[in-house]
Amino acid sequence: MARLLIVALLLSFCFGQVEGLNLAYKKPTWQSSEKYSSDNAVDGFINRTAVSNQCAISEASPIDITWMVDLEAIQSIIYIIIHYRTEDVPFANSIYASRFLGFSVYVSNTTNKDDGQLCYHESNQTNIFEIMKLTCEVQGRYVIYYNTRRGNEHKKPGFSSMAYVELCEVQVIGCPLGFYSMDCAKPCPHGCRHCSFLYGTCLGGCNPGFEGHHCDIYRRSE
Image 1 (cartoon, rainbow, N blue to C red):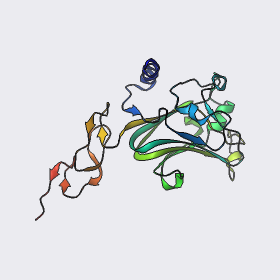
Image 2: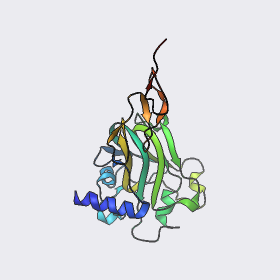
Image 3: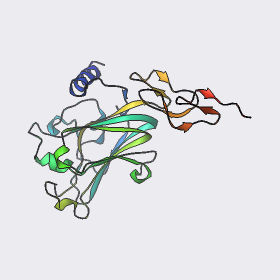
């Protein structure tokens, strides 16, 4: 509990108020190859060095690499925070930044990224940081990190020749399905298919028989 409080305080310092729950904490994980366990990315420790043995690290791949976490149920996600490996050296223009370049994050209801929604694809080298906070207000069960060096990706300026997983912590912030608010204590309106994380307004339409921004108006059939 004390460790989680420290993590929350660190995030609050970096990003302001932290809303929602970390839905990825201690959930099942998998990655294409393992040099250091994929579980290290959801253990609650934020230490961006391999020597700490607290990062999920893969073998190098000349093709592509995948890491994923199973949230064990479809959840309402608001954003995803990635803490990348740095080895305590300046991140910009480092070898670790070159390995991070070009990554994508998907949210899917299956283990196949192509069945899901692309939340983020990194394509601007000036916006790559060791901590990436990605807004992604979607519902899904699997959060999938993917990077590739297929085609000409490995020839792009600044890109590493090989693809890697070097994730020291991945936090999936949101609420269990059907709830919203910063503490996830408020149930979504009964008529909602899916409600906004912060305000409870309905997203994706109302259930049959309901209408209004909060799908809380019952429409009587004629």
